[in-house]
Image (cartoon, rainbow, N blue to C red):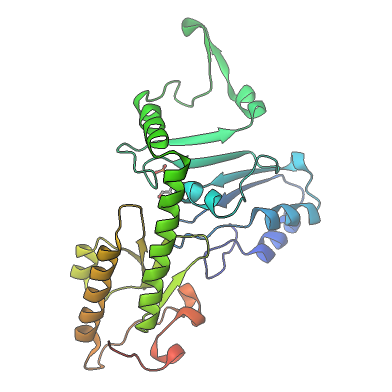
Length: 271
Ligand SMILES: Cc1ncc(COP(=O)(O)O)c(C=O)c1O
């Protein structure tokens, strides 16, 4: 297991240390192109360089890129995922950014890996590479429909709007002196955990320790973000007004520079 930095990315120096420590074994590395909670994107180039520096030749490592959510976001901002690089596979989920109504996804891998895993199934007179020996026939149609009805330009517009809206929410929270973090290639706004369970339930926020996140998807409008922001600011006034309870310190989770707690950023300004 490799450590991560506070923004959720792989800690590359820890990766280097562990690679050197396990040099007698091959490395199978899962790279996240958008981690679940913080939307952190691991740097493929740094990881490949680290492998090379540690003496791992191409046949001594396998890299899988888990791009479940951000696989349809990141390529429109920065061209980081490419089979021109020595990666083994990439996966994306169809029911996340694309919004397909049934869980589905795409795994792209090299022909050589497919050939290695495929077996001839005599009774269907065909070669099969699936784990279960079968697959859902409807989900590829849903994926195809979603991709072709939006097309590349439509997805690009969704990405642009989501990034813009995520930055908008982050800026508003920051201006209101609320702890917040947004990774560069992400639409996941990480903020302090709201005090009240009713509030998190109402806004369907998922929380871990003292942080929560808002995933700005194509269906989320500016109005929804404004309503959320206003509600949060008003509720915080009630939660924290007498000073007996203070907003949580989230420096360990999102970094001191993003933490607006009394220790890291002085007094809160209630708008
Ligand atoms: C980083 C990451 N990988 C994988 C998954 C799971 O994807 P799927 O729902 O397509 O199995 C998720 C879902 O939350 C995720 O955030």
